[in-house]
Amino acid sequence: MSDPVPHPLIRPVRQGNAFEEAVERILDSIRLGLFRRGERLPPERETAALLGISRTTLREALHELQDAGVLEVVRGRYGGTFVTGRTVHPDEGLPRVDPAEVEDVIVFRAVVEAAAAELAAAASLSAAARAHLRACLRQVEESSPEDYRPADARFHIAVAELGGCPSLVRAVAEVRSRASDLLDRIPVLPVNLEHSDRQHREIADAILGGNAPGARAAALAHLEGTAALLRGFLGHGAGHGTGKEAGNGDGAEDGTGEQTGDGPPGRERPPGGR
Image (cartoon, rainbow, N blue to C red; front, side, top):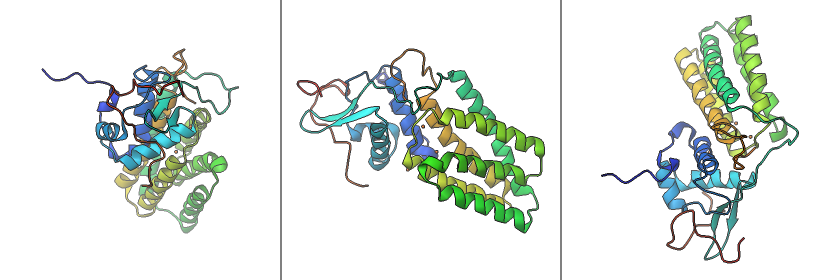
């Protein structure tokens, strides 16, 4: 008989969005009560192996969740990375979101924005249209974290505009508005922004090169990264009284603290609390 699966982290992430999916899996495990308030996550080496990612990528994910207030690092013999149990909402005045709404936005984005990228790549683009796309790409790449999301939305709408289908432009604008409303509820993760910049450039390069299948694939890969963060912070039952939800775009030496000791993962606590 095979050993039972200890928790969802046993499922390796897909490498295209390793950072975002690692964040999602960790948040899922906390939300499902597998790691409760004050409990320690498994050692880095074990967690990285379960997720199928490098320890560098794992450290980036843990660092961002620490900055978001979801995790806390304790140094020393009984140290490690512990679950704070705190809920993170950038704007506490925002109403709770239904996870079904999160999934609806994710699915609709995948349909319309992938189609928009494919249509744009198949279109005969004028020099002005090409310059406009490059300008929107440059604007999002040069944006500060505070200004990133509006510039990000403008880039995706610009992609839709290139296809010459006004109905599709309206659909992309509508779903981007809904997505922005959801993104305002979760922390801005700098590593995700760097990842998004690379993916935006891949989308733009495919469009400007007339590679319609490549543009569609690049758009879907980009959307999957955002979907992982939305599901991790807001989906799968978040906001329904669990007390575990958090509120949001990939080697240096640690910053998370490698755990020591032989006790069961996620159960040992430092003497006298933290």
